[in-house]
Figure 1 (tube, rainbow, N blue to C red):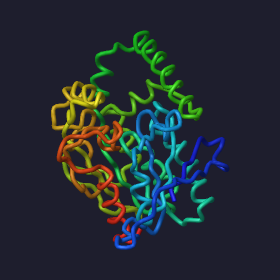
Figure 2: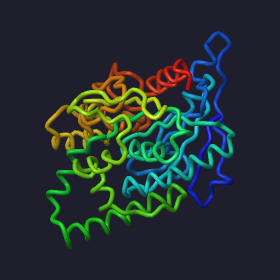
Figure 3: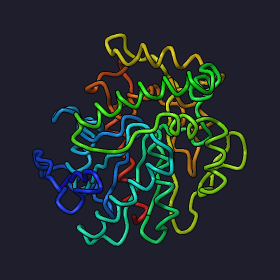
Figure 4: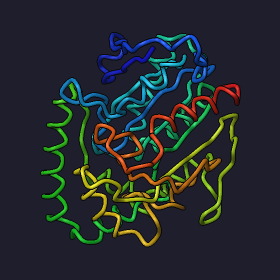
Length: 311
């Protein structure tokens, strides 16, 4: 059963069920049945469901629950510091643990959500079974560096941040949440230097070499990551034009926002899927490049990986 956890103020009454058709008798109906629930943490924009029908994780929760998985989706500030978003996720995870009775959770974070789940893992390490970074800028994003360098500090950045915060507040409203927004804090967190500062405090699974792997298991927590290296994948997807442009900011192959090596964390499942940053969460409404892997299948395969690992 998929469940949704809303803002911290509404955690106690936030469960809603996801209705989907049952697994067919001839299929493996326990393929995605992990020992512990899966909790999905969003990146920038931070919503779970927008205006009641736009899912951040398009078809992914239902793909996991279809064959036995238990999944919770969460929300966060659209833009804020890694620490602020981490605290928001921590409150929701604690509620999930209390409501579900689970001893631990498997945390999966997309983009900036990867920082959130690492924050939670360090706050309550005995309650986290695994961490999975999906297209997460573990060592920072060149796009954040570019914006930080191009927009002058002071009045210009403050003005841009004010406009951005206002827009993000509208997204919060449409998502039915009420998280604080801080665009400048988000920008600082996602730069190379901001990510390095976060990594110094939250080092679990972070590679010690430029493009290596990190610890597969640390503090009893299993660590995984995957990424893509195609910024433009389908001309029919309006988001691709944005990622095609932002992808030019990076010097290495990237998904439009996150570089191949920057995404490495723990065991690297694969770092060159033909996906961009939005394809990673099956957006927009499942539009992706022809003959490319179905993102939903990647999450299903990973749930089975976690199941086989005993978590």
